[in-house]
Amino acid sequence: YMSKQSDINAEMRHILIDWLADVVVEYDLQLETLHLTVSLIDRTLSVVDCPRLKLQLIGAAAVMVAAKYEEIYPPPLKEYVYITDDTYS
Image (cartoon, rainbow, N blue to C red):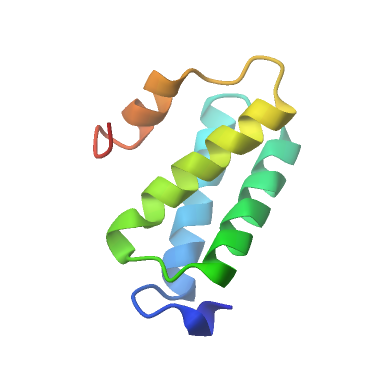
């Protein structure tokens, strides 16, 4: 599916997943949340040509959805703004 991407490559995906793993550890989220996050990202990238500037946003949205599904107390929305360094609001 990465061959469909015109602006990102496997290394960028790797960096995103590594960052999201740090987020999961930092917020003490379940390992299942990370697995679901990666699955959501891969499914999204398989159907959407993602611009480089939106890759972190897709990752943050994926971990937010995964946390709402897997966690009893998911982080609030303001935490996702914080972890993206106020890039998206």
